[in-house]
Image (cartoon, rainbow, N blue to C red; front, side):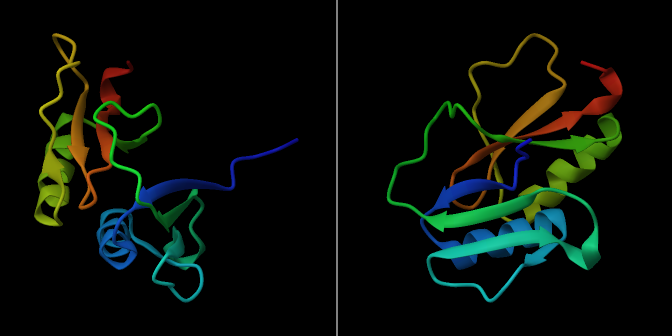
Length: 124
């Protein structure tokens, strides 16, 4: 049976993107970082998916078909994490597809890749 080995994001600046995601997730490079590729893994052997960052000239999609969902335990944790991520260089996305009462906040990383911070206490 296959399993997901790594989620891959295309980026225009691998070191900048790696710095953001390492701070955001507490990840470290699996091996020495290249200018065009790095695989990030959870620090200290914690379980979790790998995040690979590869150099790309493809423009960022406004409504990407694939994105990361980052889970927060409740609304207060979600708000705190959003603020922390913004302080690391993320930015709010003017998302036109929010439902009336969203349990998620759409942000973009330093490369413009969209991701969501989810309030998992709402069970949605």
